[in-house]
Amino acid sequence: MKKIQLGQSSLQVTPICLGTMTFGEQVDEPTSHAILSRSLERGVDFIDTAEMYAVPTRKETYGATETIIGNWFAANPGARQKVTLATKVAGPVRATPWVREGTGMTAADIVASCNASLKRLKTDVIDLYQIHWPERHVPAFGALYYDPAKETSQTPIHEQLEALGGLVKAGKVREIGLSNETPYGVHEFVRLAEQHGLPRVASVQNVYNLVSRGLENGLDETMHRLGVSLLAYSPLAFGLLTGKYDQGGIEGPEAPKGARISSYESVRKQRWGRPDALKAARRYNQLARDNGLTPVQLALAFCYTKWQVASTIIGVTTVAQLDEDLDVWGTTLSPAVLAEIDQIRWEIRDPAT
Image 1 (cartoon, rainbow, N blue to C red):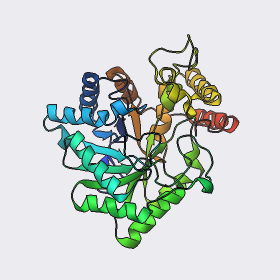
Image 2: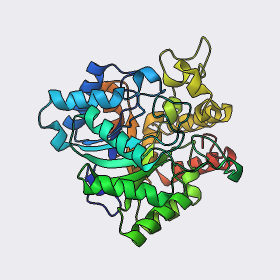
Image 3: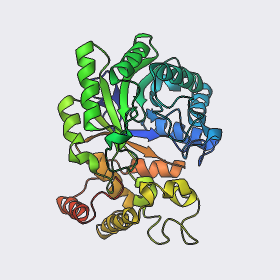
Image 4: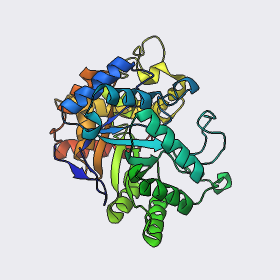
């Protein structure tokens, strides 16, 4: 895989990134270490995590994923120097009071979170430090509408950028990014950075997959014109696009055991549990089979080959799943299949956005 530049930054990363939010919840530490080692062995040296992981988030597992990665670095001398490491500061409290006491995300919160992540990760510097979700009220994680009445923002974007700039100046962070952002947010972060000589965001990490393509309704143009790269997360839609739920559904006695959506009620209450999301996924999964592909091959090839995507974040629970996802690299979809994908989208528009 040829490395690509993230935005206008100094970072050169692989077009596939290893996501780690299952480490410490669905995946134990020895298996997590095996996945990390296999990823590096196969040439994927871009790792993404977050202070609030593992997911589903719980007080007992807060910071567990970063700790597991830090332990892997400690057990594998030289690995840290081979890896581009990304993590995130959590946005305002989302029913997670153990993350911080306040309800916002102040400059002091950003600095404190960064220092805690550095300690857990056993590293001196974070290559890409991202704001996990906006400090502003925005429609994210499946919410559809912006509502000005719900605005509770306490920290201006300029102040957030100054805090991030201080971390860069201190050598604790190399580049910065955003996640779960909107076109307005991306424009403001770039505008203020250029106006005040502060760090420019390199990337935005947003959901993007066959059942959640809302990014193509304007954010993709914003990022293209401003030179900001997309890190696409949940390319398999929490497993909906693997085919594992096609027969037994997402809950009940016939649902697959141990799978993410069927295992956690909190996940089923999110966008991934919507009836139309499963309905659309079944259509895409059957389209894959009708064209000699597995559902995983169709879903990942879609993300791997889209011009909007700089790097696709894959989350796995086993080494075998990692190999399966990496083996899809190089698969292309015919114009006819791409046309059928767009036809399904026209009929069932982005049910998991």
